[in-house]
Length: 363
Ligand code: PMP
Image (cartoon, rainbow, N blue to C red):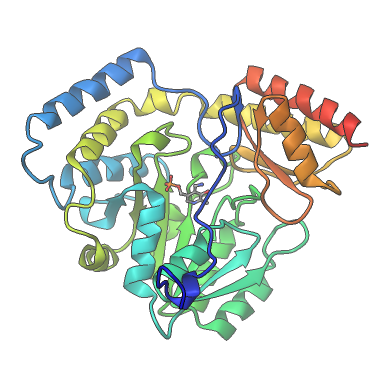
């Protein structure tokens, strides 16, 4: 008899584990390398101090003020007049998506995505007792829309999870994909995971623009990436009010702490500053793609703040060689590929110097 008495689906499973190694250049979890200014940090601290005076009380269970502020932010980035009842928030978009699976997945239901994609999706399915189905992407990591439509019609998923831009490849969906998938999914919920949306290139639309046209469309976002607030754990979504109401059924009581709500609200007041480096990071990303191609590597087009490149006969050796030179990147994606998050110009110089040396060594 196994001890502890895990259910079968969990036996031998490893916990999520992007390595947290203490090296000088951290380019492995797609964070924004620029932290808040002293003024923004002081404002956040003051908001938390005020919240601390009421910590004997539970927080606002519905996080109404925060959801209102998030709706206002989204209305400036593709949202079309979203209100409080169309926005939901939780501890990271990871929790938002798990809640979606808890509400709309479950025994006898399927969740569908297209691999390679975000490694947590199968875990949300496993943890909500939903059957996981992975379709495939093309060799350039794009989605063949006709094949994707056929897959949706075949699988009849209760939930489709699709990031745009995709992690770990950086690939964004073409504009027509969202509406096509929403129509194919019928009553199934289509989640467009826009964790990296603020980094998209000029002319790439947000799925928020067509939210009004599809009652089964859900768009998730996070403050962890462009917003430079990964440590606060705040993710959110926009959807029809009835979809938001369904999540209120499965959320734990008072899931979003008063400290988190105060932090996120104060951060939103500093949105222009916190998002102020996005243009620079985009430019640095494009330079990184060009540089990697100049080294003779294959590089996926990226609309995100990371770049997938390869291929290496022994990618682990390359990853390890980089760590030894003080640069932490991510061993993820299909065999032979590696992913680097976009850091400051100094960090990207360290990355390039280390990669040249490691490639020389592994030639
Ligand atoms: N979606 C994608 C595609 C991601 O890459 C990540 C984080 N790596 C998340 C969602 C979750 O981020 P968070 O929980 O910090 O919002």
